[in-house]
Amino acid sequence: MKKLFSTLIIGMIILTLIISCKKKKDIQEEIIGSMKATIDSTAWEAQEPVGKIQDGFLVISGLRLIGGVKQSIVLSVNSAATGTYNLNKDPLHPPVTTNTAIYSPNADSTTNNPVKYTYTAYSGSIVVSSTASNRASGTFEFKCANSSADTIHVTSGVFNNIYYLN
Image (cartoon, rainbow, N blue to C red; front, side):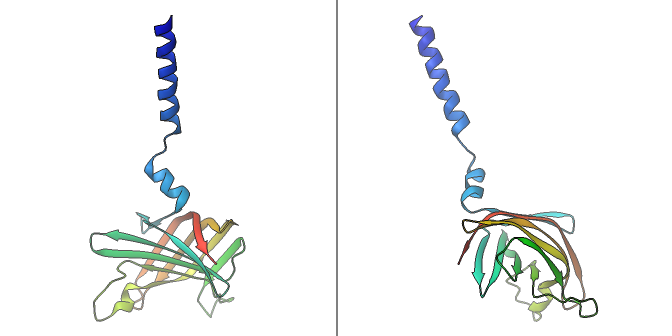
């Protein structure tokens, strides 16, 4: 009977430890947050997204390192409040907004035309669904183009629990 009781206790302790342990990725998402998107049908995930309130704008940026290449997405909305923020840079289709989204597939480009590697949103939206305790969550999608008129479509974007500085 004592052996059975001891085995049950040890089993319960092991089960409790297994249930209470979290994956490293889950812990990172709780502390740092996460930022993911699909870029022209390819999955993209930031390694350590960050946020900041600057001049009344909520700015969220994510950086992904692939080999020696830095890819980034920067989202900026003209308020730290929850809501839907449209991205429209086309003066022929007002209202033109101050909200922006930028995708850079090679942030460290050393070519003669680094602007070619910056894609600025011309349509889409950023939805900020929560901003509690200096943490922001929401979704985004946008179409963007570079100076050579190459276009990229960013879809299924989500940022979750991103800590931002005031």
